[in-house]
Image (cartoon, rainbow, N blue to C red; front, side, top):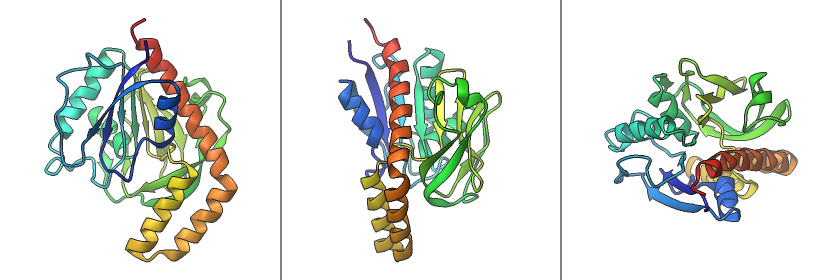
Length: 238
């Protein structure tokens, strides 16, 4: 039976991207909740085999706008307790850090563009990152950063924003980087920053980055997505 995945989309500008592409290719049954202004959550993990938390313009402590945040943190912990894989990207990763007791630092590490990250020694045996190059390019668009939860395994590090990915209990993966962003999304985000913030130079810079490193970034993103979906599929009823 195809895996059943619950997706929280916190802003339309941050869709599932490459993860969505791989979910569709594998025939996953996906339930996507529009969560940018709050939404109704399922009571527990029953009925789904995996949980995906996407990015958004709000911050991980913005409970006044996203009133579902506290319940979402509890739901993520419930998925993990049930042994069902959880994946968080950008805001989603920050929420997972918060869910497991780590601090999220607001405005402490702004980044935008393709950034080269380093895989840690632990990444060599991680179910999602094993076999990835020692250095991988990944899209960034964030202001905040998270501490590592107690007992978390660091998987990716960066220079401007050190904590880029971690694993908890072999079932939860949190990423600061937007590994799900394909080259077209990168260009769209650059155009948005040009139109809203007047950063025309960043648009040209990111276009050059996407042309040079976009293919490698997409390959890494598809690896992470497929490996996570392998874990989810293993939880699906036969």
